[in-house]
Amino acid sequence: MQIQALVAALALAVSVHASAQGPIVIKFSHVVAPDTPKGRAAERFKQLAERMSKGRVRVEVYPNSILYKDREELEALQLGAVQMLAPSLAKFSPLGVKEFEAFDLPYIFPSKAALYAVTEGPIGRELLRKLEPKGITGLAYWDNGFKVMSANKPLLAPRDFQGLRMRIQASKVLDAQMRALGARPQVLAFSEVAPALRDGVVEGTENTPSNMYTQKMHESQTHLTVSNHGYLGYAVIVNKKFWSGLPDELRSTLEEAMRQATAYEKTIAQNDNDAALEAIRKAGTTTIHTLTPQQQAEWRRIMMPVYGQMETRIGKDVVRAIQRTVTR
Ligand code: LMR
Image (cartoon, rainbow, N blue to C red):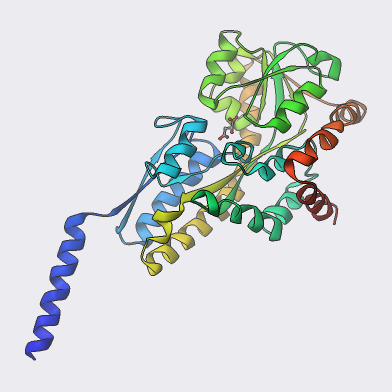
């Protein structure tokens, strides 16, 4: 009896100590607006994680590069200053994992179904495993969508890009893609794009409609082409030491919260982009063009050499494996 009382007293002391320490905090930093597919899924993960862990975890979401810009956030994650990020797949090469740039290849995914066959299959898992030696654990792929192009002139034929200063993410594949079109690519962090378009530092850009609309990029772009020439998506990543240091059962709870947030993200990404394109149309600032099948074929033809130029950098095996999966 005495021993039981002692055990109970000890258990109480331990739990008081745990709650006195407060919840485990996960800082989740990202660069886009809260009302984008990534922003909303980050909030959903927060709600799920806090509820399912019964308050043992607190998730603090920092949107819009409040804490860090593109490159800094990766460094902050490795240093443990933040615990969770969801950078676009175009931004992983500074970590030395260039294989992710395969996702930037022009017209690589004929559909979302083909994309999911890659991200949810062995290729997707293998790519995430490549992050482990960098001190990073990959948890999930989140979706955004296919990109559009914008500028202050109609972009209908490759010659329309001649000499245009186009903002890109820091990906060599995107650099090669813009050069294939005859444009002059310029890497800028996401938070710098809207001001750079406004001030004429760059003349055009590519992105998804949801990113363009929520950053008000359309307000300084008079033309937009629905080209679907490339894909923008994310990997949700955590600091490996932090993640593996969590109690097993709490980590499982958070993995389940991430599974549910990821499923939710997939259901909203397309709708958010469709709604954003409609909102840009309604704003009246920007003429929206759709390419004819002949124009599409011409864009594709001009961009195809990018595969040959970039496959050694990305890794031929990865590119071939993706190509085989998407045509299955
Ligand atoms: C960009 O820099 O254009 C995107 O990667 C931003 C994002 O996270 O969607």
